[in-house]
Length: 323
Image (cartoon, rainbow, N blue to C red):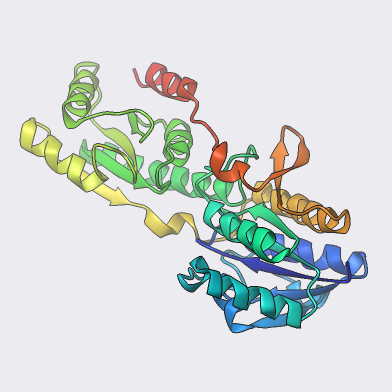
C-alpha cells in the first residue's frame, strides 16, 4: 500500500473536512501518498484526482461542507461508469480508496470492490444517523445542535405571541434528528416516520396542551413523516380545528452547514485514522464505525442491511415530559 485516495459523496455533512484532514495526515504519517478526488464519483469518472499533503488540509477542521466537493452521479450507477472510475484509479496507481458518505456512497464502493477489486473503506458521513454498523455518523451531532438552537429561538417568539409553531427538520425517513432535537428543545410533540400519526391526533394533543394551561406550543416534524410535511400538517390542523394561528418554520439545509461540533470533529478524526490503517491492514469492503467507546470495522453491507433502529423509548420520554 503506497498510494490511497479519498473522496466525499452524496449529501454533505458537517465534519467531512475533519475526516478528509484525518485521512490525509494519517496517510502522511505512514508514508503514503494521498490523492483527493474532486466531486465524488462524478469526479472519479472524469479523472479529477489531485495530490494532497498535510498543508493542503491546514485550517479545515472547523469548516463545514467539504473542500473536495460532492455530487450525485447517475453514470456511476451503470457498469460502464464504474469501469471508467476503476480505470482512473489504476491510471493513478491508487492502491486503496476511502469513501466518506452515506449508504448510497457505500453501495458504490462495494461495487468497485466486487467488480474491479478496488480495496475500499467507508466512513459514515450523513446528518441522518441512519446507517447501520455505527452508533453515530459524522455530522449528526452538529445537525441536532443546529435544530435545537432553532427550536430554542422559535420558543421565544411562540411564547411572545401565544402561538403554535410547526418546526420541520431533516432526516429523510429517519426520526433521529427530530426526536433528539425535540427532546432537547422541550417540544410539546414530535412527529417521526417510525411512529404513524395523523392530523386528528395532533389536534387532540394541542387541545390537551391548552387544557393544561399551555398558551404556546412547539411541534417538531421530521421531513419524512407519513402525515405529511410541516406545512401540510399545519394546514390540516387549521382546517379541522380551532387552532388557526399557527406558524411553520422549515430549518432545511441550515442543518448541513456551519462549523462542526467538537464531537463531530473528534469522531471524524478517529474514523479517519482508523480508515487509513484499515487499508494498511489489507482490509477491504468494510466501513469504520463506533460502538460504545471504540472504533470498529463492519462490512459495508451493514450500512443498508442493519440500519440503526429507532428507539421507541425516546418517544416515551418526550411524551412524559410534555405534560
